[in-house]
Length: 429
Image (cartoon, rainbow, N blue to C red; front, top):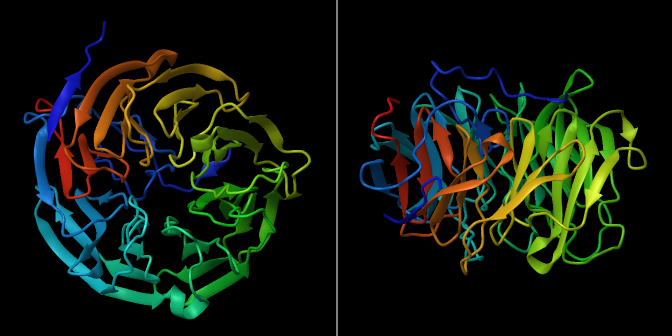
């Protein structure tokens, strides 16, 4: 790893637990962090990546595109080990504590895909994982398997054209999985303790070609005072009762022109009572960005589209929210700061051009935005005070698909071959 260039400076509530304070160690219990918005205001994180800021790096046993999670200063990530799906536990010094295997992997077919695209999730007592092979499992913090099941054997083949991308999410009682594909689509809940199926409901909508192909991850929210599961995909956003899966709220009309080849990849980000949704094909000049009010119940299609834009959006990266703004990193490196209430652009800018695209989702920590390009370039920029300033352009010397993770002043970046731990030398973790 080396640094190539350094630029100096010339309410709907997510069910996510309490916010950390400056004195608390920061966990990152799932892909988009403790509040599911991809950001934290807690901590100080490095800008320039070099030998002075590299705490350690360790070689990983195989290619995986999932994002690591952090619990109690322990890192957990999925990767293939000798051809098997596996969950790996790594301590704060970069030593492998244990690895648990589950059976043969089903490798990815996209250049940026793998058999373990789905990221782990934890409730503090166990780690829950899903793999392209169909394995859904709960693992104790010591590596013992609490339970596992095969969703391909139970519910049929996953008919998404590309590799899976949907990660499991947790309610108070259940681990939730969604499959939205060219077949019978569903949302299902499994008991976190036993793995028993608690409920499973069909979620099928008629769409143009590839509109049923979805790689998004559900969000667990409180809606009308109840624990619910929000799902975006198949050109509809739905809210389900966490207790039984029944649809409480739904909204459609995201593709009124019936455009083809529009899979859903980016997961929504929620700010207050507004869901901001990237859709369309920004990579083909057909971006869409929607602001959807989450109020009410029943079918709210006619009333809850607050705003829509057809000039901005992202195809793969999920937006990040920070201090009431929403930030988009488009697939080729343009950045947009959006007011989620009005949908208006606060500012737009761009990272230096390159041949590669952005697949990782951006993350904001301590006022700095971190965005990893697939070629291994990680940009760092300040986005405070409603303005953009590029600070650094760091080269990891390997491809990066997983999203950056901040935890207790340490920044974790998963490359195709290594896991990196970076921290400012004058900051305690």
